[in-house]
Length: 68
Image 1 (cartoon, rainbow, N blue to C red):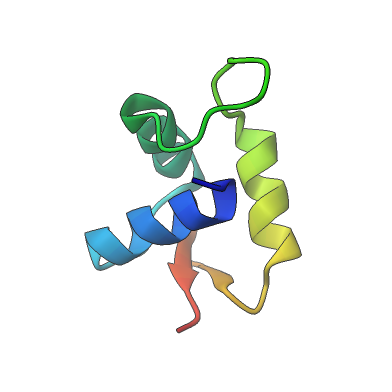
Image 2 (spheres, helix red, strand yellow):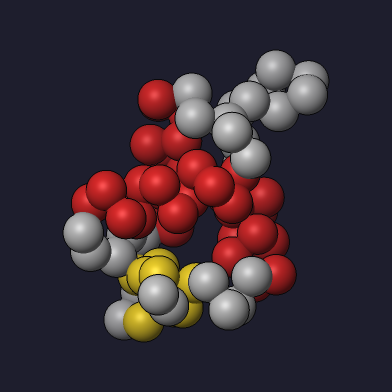
């Protein structure tokens, strides 16, 4: 699945916002997204996706939440 889809899936299934570190940890632990080079997803990659998709994600009180 794409990285943005993996982030939405985690936040939606949890029912509440998540810290950026938690999102990265869960994506890598569950292998929801694999990079082309096989390395784990980095916090910078997840942060970039969140900042690029402000119509989907919002940062509140140190947590990432869905706008929907």
